[in-house]
Length: 273
Figure (cartoon, one colour):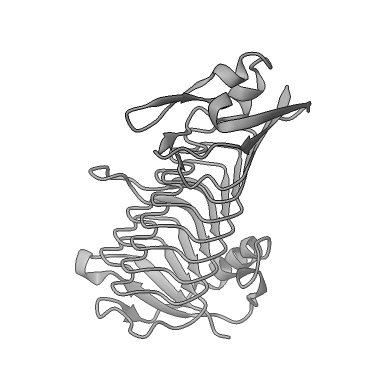
């Protein structure tokens, strides 16, 4: 199996669909085949050799590294099932869409719809993410249904919209309508949140490390008996990066239930520092 490095040499003037750039699929291609792989652009077609310098080494595990800024490259890691894909720069929209396994690491920013409808695996974004991260495509009923999305910077609006399962970690701020229409799963936000937090939330857990400027009026404070849940939750978060790895399991957060406007049974936890 080949470990492949793609170094950006010609950034196009149009957006390119990068869904073919998967570790296993490219790793099985020959050195002669790789430069001829066609990528669809906005009304144009280009080849891998047009855009990248290509380097190969032998490795037991499938891996793909993209070196250079690739904000024009959409759908990186789309439908990925295994292997490791690393982007040493920024990525475009729809990074990791419908991903079911493997690891996607983006050292810069990601565009809109990162981890959209993700089902498994892990995505790490070391910069900021755009709107609808871990959310649903327009018209679809389910957002993220599994896996882990870790954003080390800020997230845009509608974070985890219609999320049904999985874990989302945002070290920085989140925009308006975070965890909107959430059905299940866990969303942890280390910074500030925008307006309409948990709008239409039915179930699931939202954990904040700092209190919002305003608790939504359709959330009510109270609830006991989640000591065991908090113990297990903090153990899981201890494997992640700060600030989520530092919670004390014996110090319970404040708890709010909602969104009561939709008979919601979700919970909003505000960690006690």
